[in-house]
Length: 177
Image 1 (cartoon, one colour):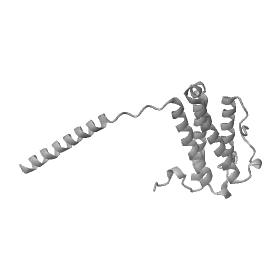
Image 2 (tube, one colour):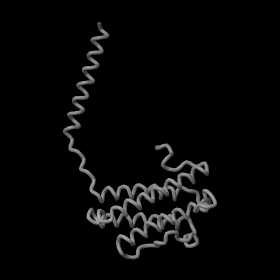
Image 3 (cartoon, helix red, strand yellow):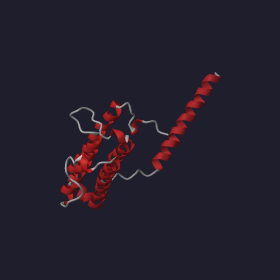
Image 4 (cartoon, one colour):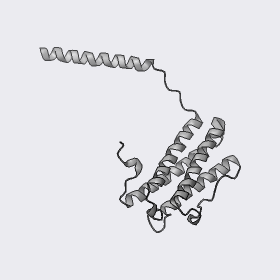
């Protein structure tokens, strides 16, 4: 009998707790949906930050590493991403921004620091342009912004394979502290 009474009290407590929790949550205002430019900027910065973290984390002596003989080096992948980002910016703005060659030569970006700086500038300039364009501009070029953000994401995935082939753990896959 005590077991039934105890179970009834526990069940009643859980029901009341869920009712009060639901009521409290219902009283909180819903977060405003993101605007188009906010959503694009968030995605752009997310993948850009992941790539920059990889670029900084990857050992300098392995920047010439190729996954297979037919693929780009780790550094060349980063240069390709940055060059493509500047290609997008030139297309969207109608001006000349950065080195927009699809595959800028590694000979012109000899050090890890130079490659990182070039990639960072392309990501930062992209973020600034998204903010400058606002919703109207982003919507006008939405397919381009989404496509190039996806392009960065595809190469992020490729660079994960470079990590795994070298028995390294990509930064995003490491345990969080």
